[in-house]
Image: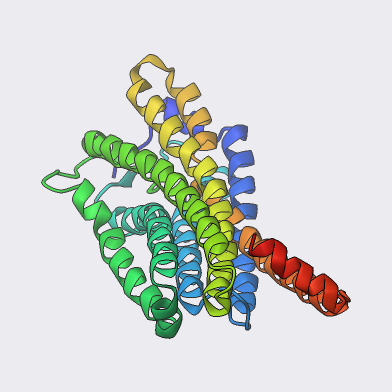
Length: 326
């Protein structure tokens, strides 16, 4: 057992750490409650395809996995601030003992990134093969989710590959200093992925708009394209929100890690916890899904009402057809 240094003790018992831990506890509980509400809504019949629903549930799974692992830090702060009696020694956590927690934490981060890629592929399939995609129902989602689960679960194993974990740290949510080089590479990959997700989804939205204009007189094709467009726009909005949070995380934490030697220890640890943005991405996911489902339902109701309430004479209908045919 290794005891914390004087500076580390100050961090353990700092009011800033206690405030941050209280905030993270609220985010942790909000993520779990919001995810349950989102899963209940996703289980109901809606215009979102079954395949996309599977991937959204997968995204909620990764969000909650991250929060469960990350909540170990607030618990440790509460333990040492409120219940620790032996003030002569604050035990540090062994990186070996932290492997289970850190594995789940890395799985949550990489899973949140990769599930965005899976959603982009899912939207691409719906755009390129709309009829076949609708017939396969949830199958593409399950296949893509399985393809995400494996690399997400193995991400920390790759990060710590051929590295001896023999050091100690304050929290299990912190990665060992011995793997800092690969951790930086991991953050850089996350940065590139977040940008790629936005670009791909915007291109898919533009492509669906183009297809919708070309198939005005093919009822089945136009319906499938319209539904794909609306779902893709929803996923794009989700990706943008996740992009902002994960972009702050990957860029902000990466810059701080690379300049750690130039930043005072107390300042570094008190600031980096607020820059660590995955909890914000996790807690925002469920409300964004709930809002998207509500918005899709509302748009559908407006379209149905506009069709059923609008009265049109035969001459008006013929005039519209003549205009549409040029």
